[in-house]
Image (cartoon, rainbow, N blue to C red):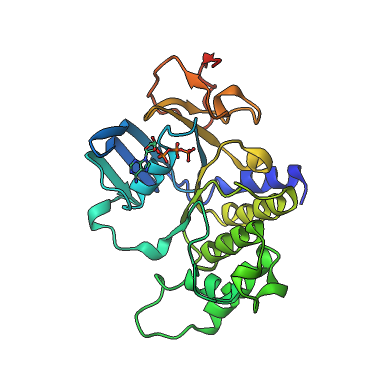
Amino acid sequence: MSTSMLGSLSARAAAPGAAAGAAPAVRVAGLTVAYDRVPVLRGVDLDVPAGQTLAVMGPNGSGKSTLVRAMLGLVAPTGGRIDLHGVPLRRFRDWGRIGYVPQRLSAGGGVPATVREVVASGQVARRRRLRLPTAADRAAVAEALEAVGLTGRARDSVHELSGGQQQRVLIARALAARPDTVFMDEPMAGVDSANQQALAEAITRLTARGATVVLVLHETGPLEPLIQRSVVLSEGTVVHDGAPLAPEGDCARPGHDHVHPHADPAPPSAVPDLEVPRRG
Ligand SMILES: Nc1ncnc2c1ncn2[C@@H]1O[C@H](COP(=O)(O)OP(=O)(O)OP(=O)(O)O)[C@@H](O)[C@H]1O
């Protein structure tokens, strides 16, 4: 798929979930997180409207993964509030609506699971207990495998696959559950360019369906046409929230810091904030 095609699909994707009055897919207010009393997030405010594709960027250690993990309830906040689809996180039960692609392959770790089994495992939260997969479930797994170009590897053990292919398996697992909202932590890390393109196409399918996508990225790369908004963290605070940054922008580079604190969330269409990157 061409870059321009990715762009036009993402433009269509903005509409379905962005209905006026709909609760944001994610609402974060005054979020603080500390590990062993060391603050890592220091008052993060962030609304992610339904249907938006958002990149969370920033230097190593700035708190990107912690923010996403807190949004998923995997890390306990020390303060603030998180809502998913209008429901406070502690009361949120509709996990079938949520997809998560962690930084590295953990599904099937040590277990000789096949590619199809790992992809199908993404549907477990959607299904009622003790209900076997329906024909529709199986069709969704087949469609997800096709979306990431792994139909021919469905019966193979995930451990026979390359790192990039394993990453595609995780994306397919998220796709198979037909989530409304998907969090992906560095989906392109360690993935070669051919696999990156396949991943970009799979994510395009998600956004074209109206899903909300929150991506932790070091650089936008082939996902650049999909990204509607960038949030940049530095030392646990939001230092940019607005238009996507240029793919090679200093702000996106690990190790580069920002000298102006800024926390006003801006709509995706807003003019970019003036950034004053400090070159380290
Ligand atoms: N489980 C943990 N226990 C203690 N400290 C942690 C833990 N997880 C992360 N940290 C620390 O919290 C800070 C933020 O980490 P986090 O992984 O959220 O940052 P990041 O922006 O995602 O970094 P990277 O780009 O390197 O993945 C870092 O200093 C990290 O060392």
